[in-house]
Length: 192
Image: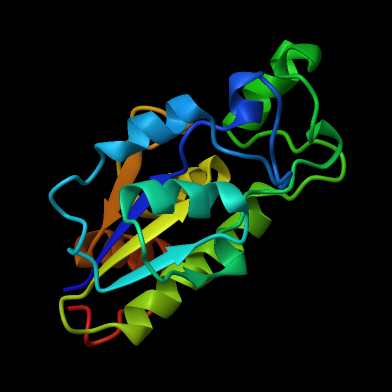
């Protein structure tokens, strides 16, 4: 049984300023780095493989949590593109549209749709379940948009679709089978 541990990156300068990051490549704050220091304190050598998105905030977060690691960068776990909202103050966006966006019922002009994000994120997860079969533990540092996709597709019940900085979600065979059943596909024999 493989285990995938997803974590949202630490607080960024744009998060702190109330600005939509999206694919803007911004730095993690000193406060965010401090908060990340104690995460996984006793499990630094616990993971067989590590993946990050191409945005530097994921690498900065990883470097604090697991120093000197050699992650694999994967485009499929990059943050969702926010189109016209990228770089805007959250307070400048219509409150009703923002609420609809947060639950996946509105897509800003030029932004990536939740279905597009789900397609690439599910492809990433499926590829890991095909690649690993020997109880490997995989650590993945990613973004809120990816975490929302993980919740939509792999988690039966969750408190909030939005993820806090450094929030974690673990996926194992149980969650993967749940996903496959909802997708209505044939479950690979190595998962059952």
